[in-house]
Image (tube, rainbow, N blue to C red; front, side, top):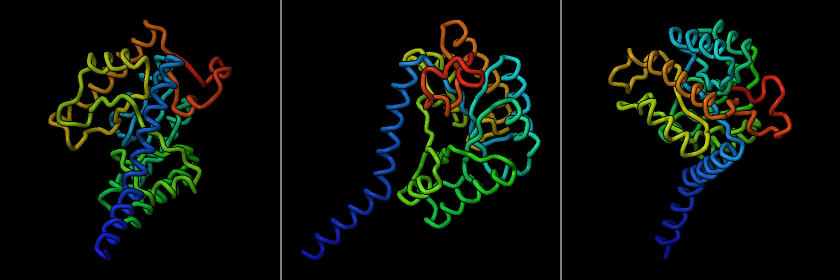
Length: 248
């Protein structure tokens, strides 16, 4: 009997520690997909930057095309490139916390994962940014990181279209466009780091991201999608026509 009680307690602990945040993530992904489809919105979001080589080129492309995006930056890289962070802010892009060192909360000790989030937030605050969004590295959250995010009033920001651009086999632009069409919009996950460590051809990553971004903007222009920052999704539809809200 004691063994069964302990086993049940262990399973309950695992559920609340890992499964509950995961279920909340799935719920948000479904909610985001419905919201984007209802409003025919595409969100361009970029993780793991700023990259010293890619981010300036990406900022130029976005400025030239007249759209804004959401950047989930790593604190350590933001501190290395404060000028790029300032450029993104100046251009109207949204900045979110992506931790200080990009630690996977499922593989870190709880205190280490919490420290990674806090440090990322502190770094951005010191650089003049007050993030309202948090995207967990690898999309992994635990009960501890979930509660910290809530306590810090951070909105967890997941995605609905994974381009897999940091994987060994990234999705082609054609495949990503097909996913966006099928979903009727969506929050697109890309990476503006210079060379993803998992990529088989890391040096081709910048050109791939620039081409993919351009293709998505072309899709929006040709088929009547709006391009928005992540935070704009949660504003009222009446705000869509205001400058800096929906664009594209």
